[in-house]
Length: 197
Image (cartoon, rainbow, N blue to C red; front, side, top):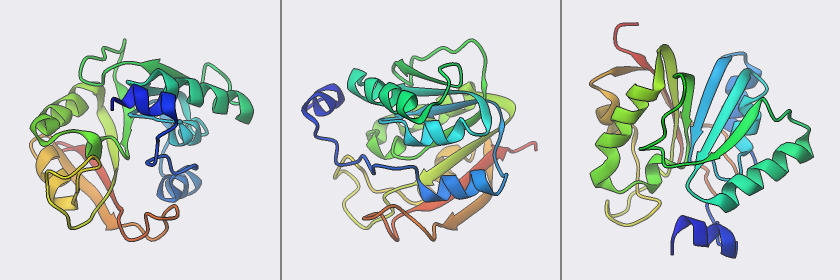
């Protein structure tokens, strides 16, 4: 089943139904903010809409039209201005924005990518991020299962660190204390900046 078919049929068990508590905490503590943010694999857009509180423009990318439609409905329901959050149906690996982003936020996107494309994920993060930008990864699921079983594929802080190591260093890498129901104990927060910063 494709991602588009899953959304059309309402088979979206990965949809947590709310913003990630770890992201909300960063926003509430004033840790994030800027001009432009990107959320690849945005799904229903809960996290993209949360980021619109502190970014002037948030772009949510998803392959599935159903996900983008759902995000647009949520945007309207929550009264978020259309110029603050835009949903774009596009392939992250082919997406060409007009300018780079100050923040790229990855939650349940990397864990949906086959192992053979993960290096390409890291290269695209580098290409799409502004020179002084930050990547925030909510690493999930941190579980013990066969590496080829998924999606979601098992993640680890070390895996993400190794993928980003050429260009980025971690300024925070810690186990998440509060998660949405069913994800407790399976999330780590990573914050990454370029090595020359």
